[in-house]
Amino acid sequence: KIKMIIWPIWLLILVVFILIAVNLRKVVPTNEVHILQKWSKTIAKWKDFDGNIYYHFPQWVPALGISVTKLPLYVFDIKLNSYQAYDNGKIPFNVDVTAFFIIKDPELAAKRVADFEELKEQLVEVVRWAVRKTLAQYDIQEIMEARGELWQKFYEEVTNAVKEWWVELKNIEFMDISDADGFSVIRNLLEKKRKTIETESEKEVALKDKEREIVEAEARKEANIKRIEAEKEAQLAQIEADKLTRTQEVEKEKLIKLQEEEAKKALYE
Image 1 (cartoon, rainbow, N blue to C red):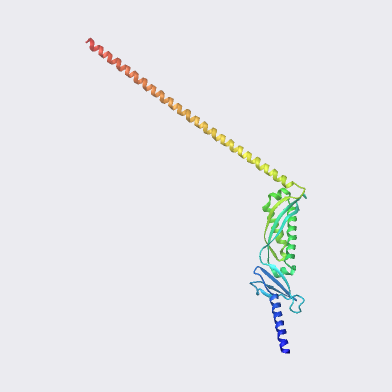
Image 2: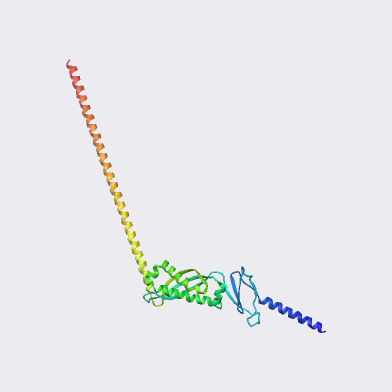
C-alpha cells in the first residue's frame, strides 16, 4: 500500500517539476539580448552568443535565482513631439525631433539601467537637453532656415552625451517647428516668407513678360525692316522694268521712223 501511495506522489512531483521547468525556460528572441545577473556574475544571452536559452529562477531562489535585464538589438527611436524650446531671444516654440539609437554594448548598458524603459527615459532627457542647448544658440528665423546646421549640432551633442550609456546614435531628424500656445512668431515669419516668395515670383513673371515684349518688339522691328527692304527691292525692280520698257518703246519708235523714211525715199525714186 505504501508503494502504491508513493508512486503517484513521485509522479505528481515529476509533473510539477516539468511544468515549472517549462514555465521557467526562456528563449531569447532574435532581436533582443538578455543580461543575466547571478550573484557577482553577469551573462549575456542572445542568438549568436553563448546560446539563447536559459532558466529564469526568481531571485529569492537560493543559488539559482537570477535577475534579467532585457535590451533590444534593433534600432529604436526616441521621439519628442511638440517639445517646447526657446531661441536665443527667449521666444518659445514647439519642435518635433526623432532620434534613432542602437545599444553598442548590452552588458555594459545593463549595468547603468534596470531595464529598457529606464534607458529610454534617460535618452529622452539627453535628447531634450541637446535640443534646448542647441536651439538656444540661434534666433527663431535662423532655426527655421538652418536645418542642415542644426542637424549636425544635434548629432554632435547627443553622440557625446550617450557614450556613458553605451548607446550609439544612428541618426537624428528635426521633423517640424511650430508656434507655442499664445504665440504667432513662426506663423508671421512663414507669412512674410510666403509674401516674399509671391513678390519675387511676381517680379520674375513681370521680368519675363518684359523680356517677352522686348523679344516680340525686336521681332516686329526686324519684320518691318525686312518688309521695307522687300518693298524697296520691289520698287527698284519695277523701276528697272519700267526703264527697260521705255527703252524698248524708244527703240521701237526709232525703228518705225526709220522704216517710214526709207519708204518715202523709195517712193520718190
